[in-house]
Amino acid sequence: MIIDIQFNQGSCSWPALSEATLVAEQSGFNTVWVLDHFSGALFGSDSMKECFTTLGALAAVTHSVNVGALVANVANRSGGLLALAASSVQDISEGRFLLGIGAGSSPRSAFAAEQHVLGNIIEPVLGRRHERVVQTIELLRELWASQRDAKYVGFAKTTKSIPVLIGVNSIALARLAGQHSDGVNVWAGHAKRSEILGAAHLAAVNRPNFIMSVWSKWDVALLDPSHPQRRQWQHEGVNRLVLQYGGEPDTNDLAVAKQFLK
Image (cartoon, rainbow, N blue to C red; front, side, top):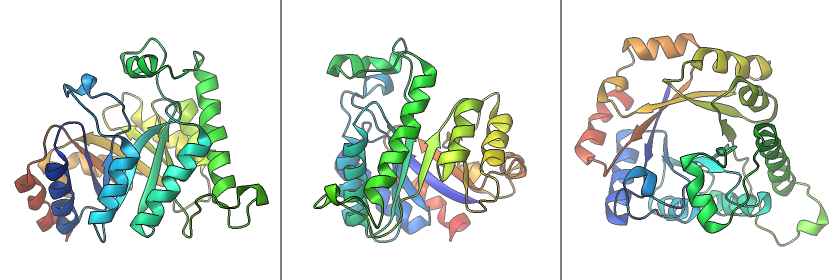
């Protein structure tokens, strides 16, 4: 099982974030993920560094660890802008970028407050938000294609394929993830986790490299492959675990991972 770490870039200074990322790299984590939010208010922070600006900086100071967005809300940017931002990080990282995308929340959700402040349009119908995810993936692949339309001449492009996974919390979106993306990510504590993973796996038939990932709050005990919960997730087909570190990272915590991941 691949083990990743996710940091909340709004909860720490740039020096602390870059140091934690370097320790995570040295400790053997596969990928360092960051959030895609505009405001840190929901996380008790008074600021939030922009997702792709942060990823470009992390890509520049690291050498081997992957970097990724988990997840980029498709309501936050046009599909074209998202494609260009992702291509830029892929170029800076020399092919170490992974892109997680999500449908975003309901306009009535607390998570939508930052969108309302900035005047971003949020689709009120869930099905339409799901459609936008699929449309975004289609545009990403159009812009990233090795043989793309001549109208895209001069736009940022990739020399290595960027894996795209979808953050989901429903069976319907899990099916779409299996059909259209390279992987799925779901909260490990979701009441329907097993069904969601099963739906994604079924839809991704005959794709052995499909990413089946769950995210869970940081717990050093979960670094141990023999942990009962790890075994349960693996039984459900999970091949990637993202440990979400809340607050300013403690590099001593991260260094402990070396004994399990190296």
